[in-house]
Image (cartoon, rainbow, N blue to C red):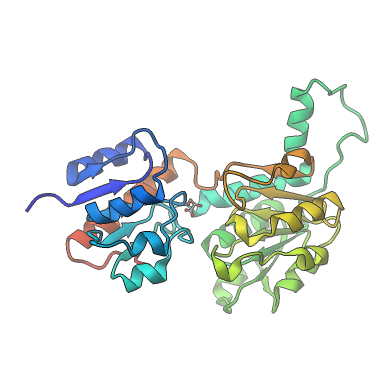
Length: 323
Ligand code: DGY
């Protein structure tokens, strides 16, 4: 029997691609151009495994194509809201992801955005680049102190806990959080974190609100106009999770009308075509989905996919199986 046929939808770190080439009959994506829906459908018909990522909409239409060959989707990334997992399940296709290995780097980006937003980092950089800085002044570009403030986390999984660790130990912040299920006291005690009964409680009490819930229809526009109005006028909203958790139109209004002081965003609705109004505002810090973007982490993500794949082809249960 020949080697399994594997398709990688985007360019991966070279060392991981090399291993894939040794183990499988693999098609890489040297040009790094995302596949069209038609190409994804054809891939389902021609490959035993597809290794997609966040930029690939693996919809019901793609998954229900006739004469499928694919048995496993080894997602490169922890978030899987771009894959219709229910349809995958009904079609007998296994889906895996890469949890754990990107926790620290994503938490770092949440802290980076929190600091950028509070201390007006991106705005200061623009001031200098635009040659508009006339020198130090006692009242120039005053931001907000971070140390000792209250950080509210929506969702308290791995990444949120890593943010809590940084905020609590590094910045002496008070941690409050909302999570649908009750967290073990062993975990919350580490950061003296207080679990609230509602999202609203976090929004009204926190100086900084950071989002850490999964993307998908269940959390679409969880942060809407009504909830943004509950936040403090001095508060900042940080999103490193998924763009559609926040209603962008409502957030733009909130920033323009100073319902909140600022926002730090690493993810957007309709990426990469974010609402151009964000570009006109000084009180929003923008990053191009950099959460897991370090060399080490991207290699670890690739290695996780490799492990899930090799388990599957060896007839074992992949560790990070979602469905
Ligand atoms: C993740 O792993 O979910 C990152 O956002 C990239 O998809």
